[in-house]
Image 1 (cartoon, helix red, strand yellow):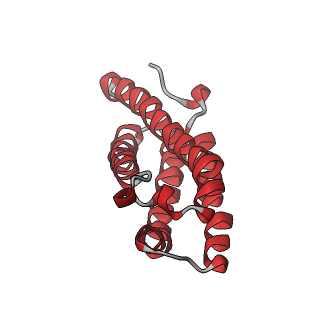
Image 2: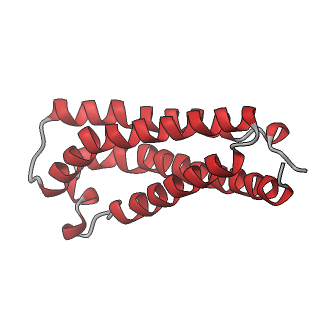
Image 3: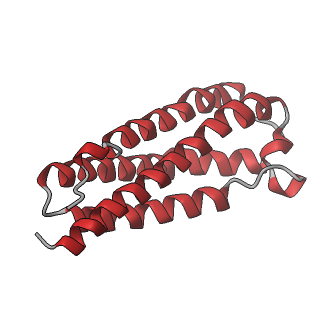
Length: 152
């Protein structure tokens, strides 16, 4: 196996794990800080009213993570066990992005423009949103197993 590609795979695994950790941290922040407060104060998630503008953070993190996972999959291809784990993480990431585009992004955009919200819709959001963070944590555990990262 190509030693340069092996070192690249190892570095990309670590970088991707860092990006997944940042994603987990963002999810925890939203759950512990924003999701506990914004249902009673919509302005907290409405950038036009001085609230948090979450989109730039998530767009950057998800974009960089997607590219890094694709690069990690390519670099780790010769290492069967690592390749399988990275493929699972990438698949989980893509599934969560689809879920976000189908449900979370449209609902978030409605909340950001609303003057009032349906309490049932808010409750559904507050229940489902931490599930994304939990799935991202699963992705981190799958990816971040240093003993399986090729180092030579």
